[in-house]
Image 1 (cartoon, rainbow, N blue to C red):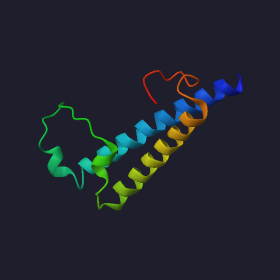
Image 2: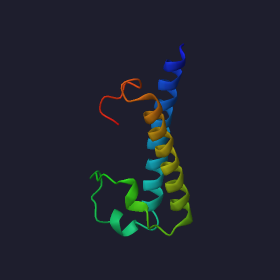
Image 3: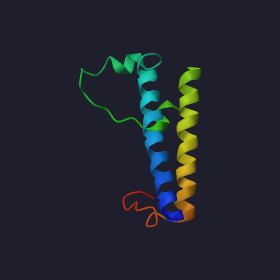
Length: 94
């Protein structure tokens, strides 16, 4: 495997990790500080959250998960800057 292929693989791993950590963040928030928001939705109903929706959370667990999500996003942005979206086969991101 070439260096560039390893870079693509690493970027994909970061993206998968970001999704997993963000999902954990939402799940923790919906069972604690954001429980009132969770109660507004019916079972199976979907809502898309943004990372910034949790910027003012006071729960330290939510804050820790939010920090991890932001750190991954920074790493992804830096890799995009260094390698370019085309080199990472990311035609819809960047």
